[in-house]
Length: 329
Image 1 (cartoon, rainbow, N blue to C red):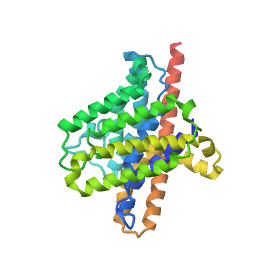
Image 2 (cartoon, helix red, strand yellow):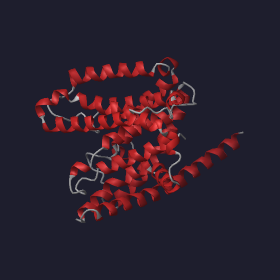
Image 3 (tube, rainbow, N blue to C red):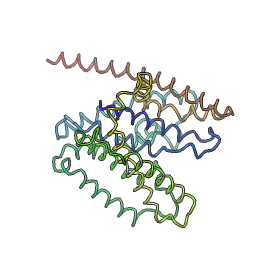
Image 4 (cartoon, rainbow, N blue to C red):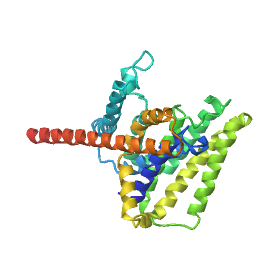
């Protein structure tokens, strides 16, 4: 694996988790950055899934899609069952069994990724699309702008709301940007420019500035599309900056690399376990930083346990499938 991708995956997990720490810090303004983490995750998915080996056929797609869903399902199913048994989640008239366990689930990332896997597969497998990813991204951008102008409610600021369908334009564009970086990896990785990091800082300020401006000035809500442009430019800049120092990242101290790799391996599990843990510890009323330490430690321990359980399930199912194939031969 390209190491800067490991670093970005760990960073994305930290950003998303941090954004859910409302009521933990002395000021909630610190609990931010969740959408940056989200687009990083989708871009990383696009990067890692670029070399799809399955054939462009209904059977090939079903095989690939099934494997992707199976890698997501066990962590979500297990943690949902556990939290239901503990009384935190409940099946009711609004959110039934299918809602909790299949679609859309409690987790917006899961709902979006299982939908976006579908167009991503065909884009990468169809030569005309794969060879012209920037053009395709431009077309998707035009469709997004058309929807924004003629169908989107611009009366208030909500364009960065992750549970609304509109956000999936941004997530799909992020996946394709990740695919483009993988496609051009030899031309980009370790080719740093002096302006990469200063530009990233400027775009980071621009993104948070636009978020603050539109959320506090309702009269400007018609221009909130700028916020999406800002975060997409920031995503590109983050990828470019980190790809440029990939070799340097490989030289990090062993203890730091181990920490980054540990977080990177359990990112989905961290995402799955955190909501309930944050709520439970927050209700205890611990002062900062004790509340932060308790929540973070509990999330990491719970996520690691969930990771081990799922790893056992994956190993068992892979062994069964291998045995069945041998028997057929």
